[in-house]
Image (cartoon, rainbow, N blue to C red):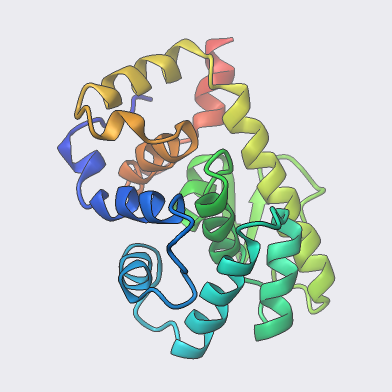
Length: 210
């Protein structure tokens, strides 16, 4: 397995740099700043997301800028205001506030060794991961917190591995501007570039190199 590292890897990510620059500026109120919201929605949200959710999401993001919430707290808050468990949106909000945290989406989960079967993300050979479709919302929140912790752990595990160091070096060589992107987002961008791959698992590859 090898990462695909080309111009497409960083294509369209100017919005990300702008988002992170604006969130670092304390004078920008993300609850009301339309420029920030337009950038964020265009980069992170699918077209079907309703305006009411966006308004509540950005209001909460502004509130959290000084509170430093955990992934569980964000996930629980989004459930409280929507009645749904938004595992990906929660990770995006947390990453925006603290880019040391990974962004979760279905492509990343699959490439990290999670398999989606019958509406479930299952970690290979690990019976501890429950169905995301469980009718008990708290069990679903527990499930996604386990997923988040697993992904965070794996990012840390291979940060100093030779294959990842080489991939990051090649990534940084694409553009001096993009070299400043935090490690977790670089990994996310590298994995997303592999989204059309089949049967690719970074964890399997790492195990083979031991």
